[in-house]
Image (cartoon, rainbow, N blue to C red; front, top):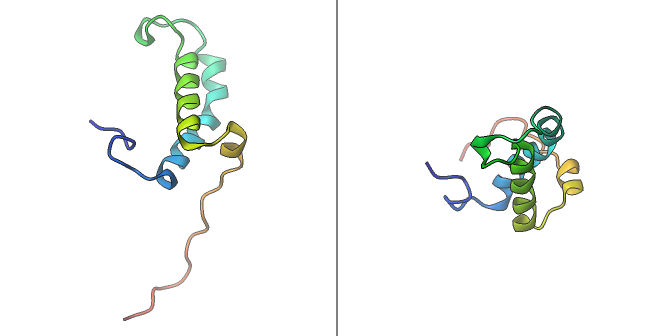
Length: 82
């Protein structure tokens, strides 16, 4: 299974996923801070924090800009017939 990044997704498609990870990270840190063999001896919180840092660097974003991100407003009404 390939990730969105491996499939060549553009930034505007990756940003919502990374913003969601950033939003959930405080709860992961609160509840999953103990070392876990599944994560190579580090905690899931450390793993996902590192993953978030990698994605923010690749996307040129900060955790603050991710917190401020909002989805675009949905289009209203019907499309014009051609």
